[in-house]
Length: 289
Length: 312
Image 1 (cartoon, each protein chain N blue to C red):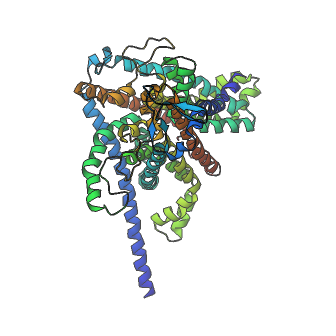
Image 2 (image 1 turned 120 degrees about the horizontal axis):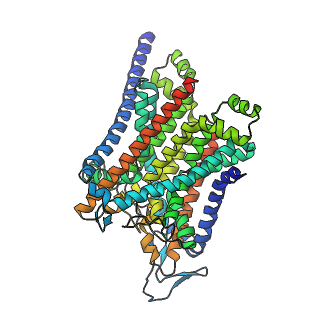
Image 3 (image 1 turned 60 degrees about the vertical axis):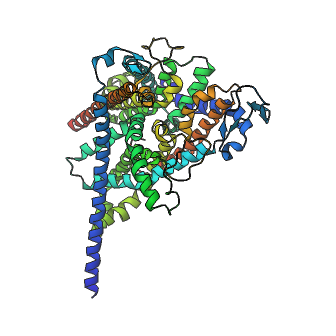
């Protein structure tokens, strides 16, 4: 009797186990389906809007092309990333090489805190401080600074992890040979950590490309090509087109919104692919040693 | 040391943002008082100069003005909690499948899917939600719930909102990635010991492995919750931008702090007294403080747990 009921119980838990694992694999399948659905949706609806004109003409009202938005997005991300790279990599070098433990802990903690600040809060703060407070108006620099603050934690953390991964013996060998700290950093640490640093920068590009809310408050929007004037001159960007043009009751504006979404997805896909290839290069690199 | 100065930029930014927002919001904090947390009426007042201005605590706004934040605070919490209810069990299932069920060859592909999902801009999720998900909920799910599940409270309405669902989709990738990382950081011996004691693979995972990584799991839940609280564009595009009304079902229009800060910008700029802008500042400050609290708790938990990766 007892043996039989134990066997029955075991069979029952085997079935339960199998059922849960099926649910778990089904959940993974559903995740893949959702991602495919989004890509398919944007791909199908966006492909109709792609044309040469899209890249050569600027937006006029609710129609025209996206040249201004593409240029604006690339410009904002490039400047934002440059600022974040200088600050983030500088921070990581100091934290890994020079900082006393308490300072390293504090800096890493504040970087983590910064990563958790909602982007709209950063956007609204810069609006209050720069756009209104300093009277810069909607501008290239305000928008680029917003992106820089938002991606700084990702740049810093990946550089931090990459630099911390440099083998001690390499670094100590360099110091033992009499190299100055700066030489050790730029001749040993940076080359070794470069794939990791670049991966973080690519992740940052992906995040910067997709930001909307903080840019609405800092870069504004413009139908014209970005003027390169740092202040008093609003800048257009792709995510704005997706957000605003889809709510207009015109087929032409919808086409532009979907085309902008498709371009964003392509950009994100390419940066992801590049980031992954860096990660694989890095793994191969480490295995080779 | 130049790099040392760079290192404290993040500390400076956080302090500057807190102080800056507080100083900017101060007139609104005085004017709104506790009504900010209890009133559901957001009204910038009569802008044509007729009637007497309203004055509280020495700060005044246009006639009839009221800046209650309850709708947005409640909407933010409701949306995020709903998102977590969907995303937490779902993403734990997905992470378990990736770590314990996928053959080694397919794993990188699944990881690529998760990373790509985390990279999709929130405005694209919003576009998809607006054109595909919300109409589906409005024409299929909500009427069904209304007809068949109407007796269950909060399920009875028929207006549309896929807010929680979409926010859940957005945080899904982050939750899966962090959960996967803490599962992988855990040594296999716990799993194997549990199997050796006669448990099924599922029992080994749920009774031995998951409890052993609960610190990392708790932290990743809180980090995702923080992300959901601040989610702006996707929610803004589909939430129905409710004003002056609280949701009474999960399909009602709602509004969140992040969404209202964007959607009320133009209206706030027309307020001659400036109090609407200061009140948006107060909302931003409130959101900042809520996320600081959530993330702070997550970091404290994380300190005692295996490192949960770079993401989030």
